[in-house]
Length: 347
Image (tube, rainbow, N blue to C red; front, side):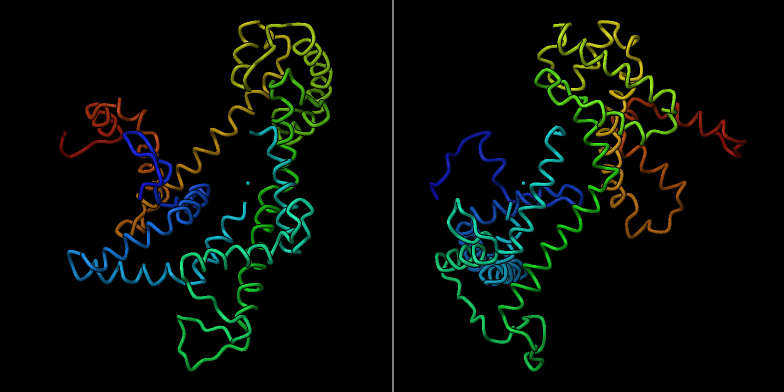
């Protein structure tokens, strides 16, 4: 439509990418792109309805077109795009909780000079619908559920449906999810990791928060170790922040760990170095778990939904660690398999 610069390597981030099951950021990007290119999407679907090569394609495009051009679809798109480095993670969580609560309470925003919640969202949706010629509902009418029989009239209004059943309920779900994911244990862990970060010349260092983090690793830190750690931390912070200029301008925990080894300080501050290693392992362990769950839907599908845990583990590990297993030859696998127990036939 001439709205975007075109060429090789451009606009890859503007497509309607498939939303991932575990990558929730992909949902936000998809919703934002859908709103930005709504007119183009409608034009493409309209053209498919006319010029589709098969009847199935024409019916599918027609159904999508009807779904796009409804007030409820526009309302949900805008509701899901009401927006949000470990050092700032916990602050962002608190900010997000406060903004969600402000949205729910429809608080007055002095900067925007209007209410920041329901009224603002309703105005935004109505403006979008008017621009794209989508009919607005009468909020005082009983809500008509398109998936139910017309004979079954609900006992609540359209306004109640969008404001209570959708707007309030989704915000409550988001607040509950944040409270469950960022509980006291998670907060202590993330705050401790943030305090180990060397960015801005160790400006985030806080001995109390770092020691609090060690209480989550009881197998590695006993009472004596925690006492020794406090003394190490006091010396370590003064050393790397104020004395040893080799530790200035470090870009993150990875650079910090390498610098500690290069300068042999990991021997002097062994307990601090152990915490740095824990902090480095945390995102890797989390990502590995997410990759395993993403892989599970490919491995344990409808045809293999009764496999036991041992067989599932054996299938998922090679799938997730493809880079490792691509260097393992078939001959090596055959020899290992044959060596497990006597076989009737040699491979």
